[in-house]
Length: 121
Image 1 (cartoon, rainbow, N blue to C red):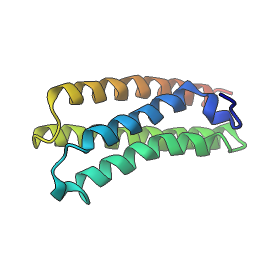
Image 2: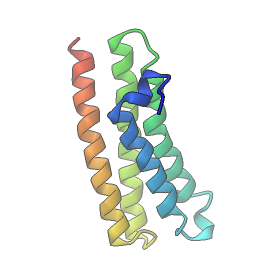
Image 3: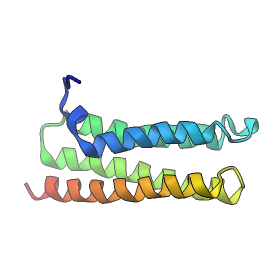
């Protein structure tokens, strides 16, 4: 695969992209009445994680890049909050909850490490 842009090479972006795919997969099983509620919110928040990282790579200063990494982390915490709620409402089974939560924990560690590097340059 040929990568044209920096963010496409970053594992810290690839993992959230995979989270988006997982989110779309698991939310297909949500009740139809949640289409414009929790389903939509979860999908948008997961997309925001990857999108903020992509946007941040185009910024010139490390402070600006760190800002977008922080926004990405904030969206990730929104996803975590929403999967907790989805599980408690019975929309998300234990297996999908654990799988998603594990991805979130992995991504959060990478985002925190990236932000530290960006702020210390």
